[in-house]
Length: 593
Image 1 (cartoon, rainbow, N blue to C red):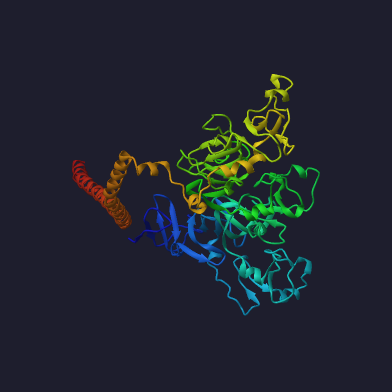
Image 2 (image 1 turned 120 degrees about the vertical axis):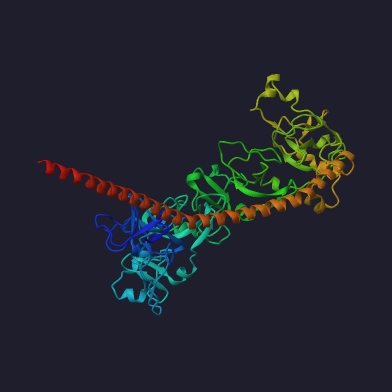
């Protein structure tokens, strides 16, 4: 008895010389006749010729291998080649959710005949040179390339299928990729023929015929969105950008609410249609200059351990704050290290540590505006011109720095100015006004509105008020600037590293760590080699089990046959014995009669 192990079924299949026409083949769903293989336990039967199909094939229409699958009834699918329904079996790519009838997948591929007739992976029918299609009374306004959406001319540069009204420029056919990585989706996208109309995940418009698809996530992009130019492309009215999941359109006209549109990178108001790209449905806009200038990845001295990636932040659910200045970066583009929850917004990413502060081991950076940060010297809120070590989160007011004088001379005022707490009593109508957020207070130098909570340089005689930013040119020369800016900003030495050079206990711990690391190295190598050996043994075990299974099934079958044979043999013996016993009794009764 022939027994085979077949990839379409988990049990061995026994050979049946002539099939039962009351049963159907599990592969093609046709009645069984002639040589057949089957598993009576599972009611699985397959024609001899169906059992000879290859388990894996390559087809011009799809870039991935196609694997033969048996589908349980009543599961149906649509063939990506002939666009007809199918059942029973399919050549499938699970990753791309791509199916083909076995008959369609195995039909011979048409070879190119000169340059007049070709087979291309973008379409299931042969494509004919457009010159020959013109002779078939094809209307010119229908001849539009499915890739670039531009008209095709009646020349040797375009091919088409009149039956499907599908046309392509020769240049588009040769340049279109079969696989892409796109900002709109984290998985790889594969170009497929689409049997149905679908909604593009980029523009939300309906499309058909071609799609860049992720079968695992059921995500689809039409060709237009998939091949959008980047923001650096000149003259493009529709672009793609890694910071947003939808295409961004050039703003061609400004409406009445244009002043409310702010750039997601810098937070400033967007003005001028030629300088703004955006997605209206998500209220996502940015200046073209911001998008071009900002690199996607940076290495910054504020966070030397890991690179920072430019990322969009949601406007709800979570609070995101800049690790440099403490300001809210929700709904903005900012640089982020997800592993360490470290964030820098665009302006802080331009700053580097520059100023020395005696007791502190690191250089400090001057921030002109901060939020939610307090001075480690006076313990008051420091939201204006703050010197800060982002690595250690150490902050001091500029005027709290010991090198910066508390009293200065300023060229625009005849008297000295002294650091004084704000606001002043004469500015308030009542003591309660000090807590009134709507009150407005001004600087006498720039005559602009100032934050009343910030201390100022003040002349009591003249009641002259100068906010910190207006006298910064006088204060900065008192700070000690690092001589080698490039060296100082490239790497910040941690406090642990610096102390380990002087503290005996830290030095001893470092030595112990080094010793244990050396001991661990050979053990790690041995563990990895054992893992490889285990994988090899596991693979060998699977091979042996696969070889043993049909033998075991054959042995079970022989033991079953032997049991049945013994049963039949005993049954025949009993019948013979009964017949022998019955014969003498019948003779005796005859004599008595």
